[in-house]
Structures are given as structure tokens and as C-alpha cells.
Image: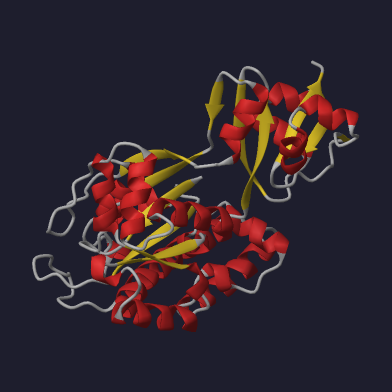
Length: 363
């Protein structure tokens, strides 16, 4: 999972990136302190893995990971090349989803590119720049398809869809809101359209705003008008950045608990990313390692096997599956077998969250 972090300059985007990844990316009090993208790969916390490691007496524990990418700040006019627009757009197209960091704190020592704090305006600014960039992409695609099909016989279905999408974008509506069939969505998927990507909104507050403030209230009200209030999370990025220097998870949790923070920014954004991208985890275990594998919801057993190795997918025979709760209750895989709790499933079985799978294959 690749999540790109976007926001206006001085929104706290790079500070949040540091907090999430334990990095030391520049976070200066001036626009475009982030010029080249910063990349951090973070393991996904999964309380089940240490328990499985003990059950299987496994030598290694391997967590799933998230890649966070801190992208150059966006300003009004970025879609036309303003600020670092071209860098921004090229990097953001590579992302699976976006984390928009919105400034919700006062600090006279940290300037705002628009000279005032207004979360609704800032979200609209970024939203419009993404829409303008998509309009350009769609227009170019329409011209290309028309040139490739000068006879007028081919490409009619795609052109009709693209022209409908362009009118939709001209009404300042994102691609994700387009009324489209599943087949039409597949046609659009390869275009890397920015407003077709899931968006998570982070209200970046100071220590006094951990429980919310006037800015977060305004932000939530605005997101409600576009049906995105459930994608909003409040994080004190500067506070959590201090955790980079802490030793051990227990010390970090104790520090956050003292401030009344029950879920860290990393925990919130990770969970939000899985929900936004409709992802889940299945597990594998044995004496060598226990591991979590990230897959889209609705993945078949044979496709999940391919996540591990193409040879396993190619030579798939069956999947032997035990439920995590059953395994922890019985204590061993063999005990689950004796109790009839290990299921044999074929290629078309839809993998469920928490399935522990042993793939049988022959190549």
C-alpha cells in the first residue's frame, strides 16, 4: 500500500510524515521545504503475529508494510505548473491513495500561504487543483483516441465515457463521484486520475487541539457537505513527531496516554488506509516464519497464493485454512485438525480477514 501525503505548504505534512515513519525529513517554516519526495516504509502493527510466533515457535516475524510518500506542497495553480506542480503531479499519480494534511492550528511563527487558517478553503484549493489536472489528462486522452480512430468506427464507447467525465469534472466534481458502471470504472482505472484515488483527511492540530477545536469543527462540517466526514482524523503531528526519539513502544504509548491520545497517528492512518483501499490481511505460519500478507477484499485463494509466489499460484492444489480464533483457542495446528477446524478450500474460495492459510501446490 502506497499512501501519498499531500497538503498546502506549512500544513505540517512533512512533520506528520516524520511522526508516522520515524524519519527526519525537512519541515521548514517556508513554502516548498519539501522539494524531492521523501519515502518511508513502515511495518503494520498486528497483535496476532507475536501470538502466532509463539504457537509455531517461528524464528522470524514479518509484518505487512505501508509506504508513505511525502510529496512537494501544492498551491493554487499547481495543476498548471505553479509552485512545484509538475513534480507534485508526477509523484501523486504513483500512489494507491492520498492523505491530505490540513492545517488546524495557530502559530504566528509558521506562515500560511494564504495568510489565514481556513481548513475548508484549503481542502477546496487542493480538490480543485486535482480536478484541473484530471481535466487536462482526460482532454488529452479524448484527442488521442479520436486521432487513433479517425474512421469514427472505433473508440466510440471510450470517447462517450470520457466526454461525460470531462463535463463532470468541469462541474468541479471528482472522478470518484461519477455515476459509472463497473466496466466503465475499469476503463478509467489505467489513466491514473488523481480524483479517482481514495482520500484520507488529517486535521493537523497542536497539543491544545487534540480533542478538537474550532478549526476541526469547521473542517468536519465542510467534509460533511461532500460526504467525507468519516474519512477525517485528528492528529497532533508535532506532538507525535517527538516520539521519534523515544525508546520502545511502551514508552511511546505511555507518553500518548498522558496526553489522552488512545490511538497514534500511525494507527489511525494505517487503519484508514486499509478501509479506504478495501484491503485486508491473511496470515501464514510455520517454524521458519509467521507473516501477514496484504490483499484486496474479495481475493480468491489462488490469487492470494500468487501474492506469496507465482509458482504457488501456478501449481495451486488446495488451501488448508484455520481461523485465527480457533488456533489460539486450541493452541496448535494439529489440535485444530483433530477437532475438524481445518478446512480444505479450492481456487475460488474468497479469503477472509484473519485466515491462516497453508497452500498445497505442485510445479
